[in-house]
Length: 151
Length: 407
Image (cartoon, rainbow over all chains, first blue to last red; front, side, top):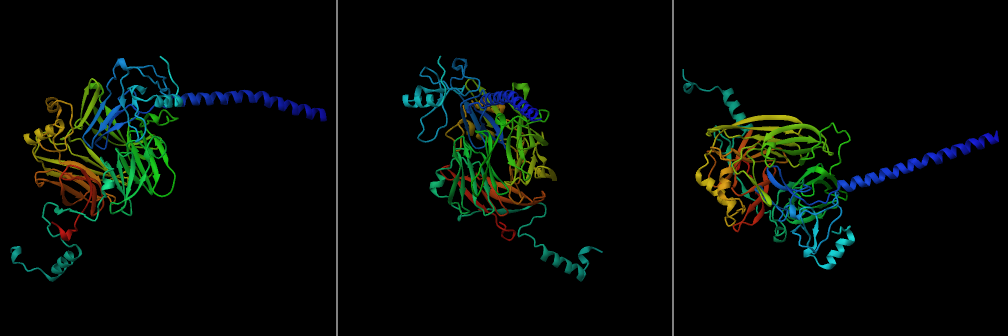
């Protein structure tokens, strides 16, 4: 009887060990998939569109593709522009928009909103930070916070 | 026997006197039109220069129960809280993308004791308690999580214009016209949706063909409001309790017309529908020229400095025979409906406001400055933005005199 009990216990332990591995692998896989999905969904905010709300034209974020300059005035106008938004300004960017390319090349860019004291940031219409106007320290700061593509 | 020779009996006299005692007539009550009141600037409300310097484009005001004010200014990137007299109390939030931070807050209102703010730039709705900590962020548009049940429609293209008393959202969703390449909005849907943007009901579907002029150029777009547009208008009280829709289409031949005011309780229950007949005011050529000048000349007072040539503007301008009878609409906290009207009998040089009761009955007309932009109202008080002699925006409060003080 004692041997039978021991055997049953060992069988149950073995069963639990063998069944837990796929479950663990599955949860890791789902976590990775969730991360990948999140990374794909969370686009870099910035490209603007003009929307209307209550009769007022408003600058609407999250429009991809769109423009990087948007100015709305009270109940009258909404102006969008991005100098250099043509095909010549297109750059390869990760599909999730998470990776920013820092370039000192001759890319066009437009200033985006920034707080007082922050270094001025310019982006092209693909959401890429253009560092032509940034100091080397600012570029290092951006690079330390984000991945970098090399062209 | 004519009536003039008949002596009224004493019960009739008693009833007349009792009636006049129970319902005193206003001082200037015409027989066929609401009587007119003249609003007075309330000098006890004064915003300090230090606060005024922060404000450049106030788009919404919500008055709390204690008459303190919450202001949205997209240029400020925060919500400003002022005391009932206009002094600075505190700032809610700051510019940024984190919880409780804003990029360009456009609308504010209340859901019970909670303040809500819509930020189209960040594409989200933020709920902030007026007392104590805690912030709830509701992602909108493409940032909103996809509904698990894909068969239910989701309002991902729209923006909320109010939080309704049941906690659901009033969503304004424009629909683009596919015939012109998708640059022009042709219709707008007013939807009642849950906080995950699941559409619960369609409240209204309105035309937008006379609302905007969209000009697309090589490196950008320009969207201009049609100054004589007659598409339907709507407004919601800051607590979301009353939604009002105004259909104001100008008849093809102008002259006499009718506009319709419809009230909805909480975006769910239709309360009333009133038809108001009016005599329209003709649009003269000088008025069109002034509008074109305003759009194209940045030096003109209040000008927009549009890059669109005057000829293009003139071609796209919608110009009915008469002004649309209602220019704008506001709903006060107690359900009074304020319609800025421009009718044949509207006095020159002032803003003419027709005030309706919460059930849509005409009560009185109020004269306010023509440049005054009303953003919040109470029974006898209105708040809004006016401009001073230098064209600088100024936050002001006006008091409406009682019936016995009619002007």
